[in-house]
Image (cartoon, rainbow, N blue to C red; front, side, top):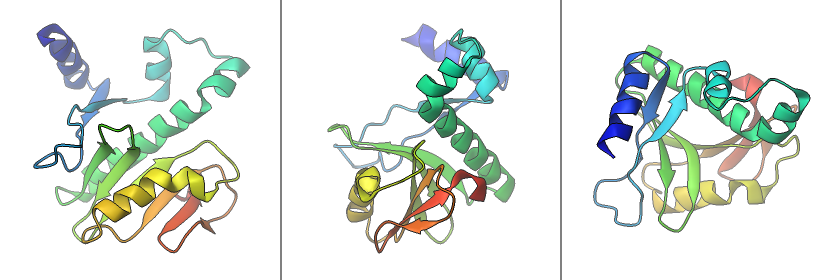
Length: 165
């Protein structure tokens, strides 16, 4: 395990990628605390996984590529905005996961990334669970996807196009 941690530290030290910490780990026994790794660039991600560029790659990896790209954008914007902004993710021991949690001085915003062009409310089930779990800190959530225009999925969840980031 120490060797694996050292390997990830080398990747961070050389700016190949970043660790994303878990949200809400302190005092919560039902939340996983292992950090998540995010590559600096999708090309680096693909090279590390030895994926060759092809139309099949886009068909089979579209969700992961979009999720990594959204994470890169959010992380870089948080770093630009300053210490009051933080990016994390949320995962429970029961398997519920929110891809990214954007912490701002005013609120905590859960963000789910889906490669779909037609988001539906079920795409936001884990966002809704997060919003129910942290009602005092989180008022709204977003599904970032390939839809053409913003679309309200519920009173607290909106689907937005990736181009809005």
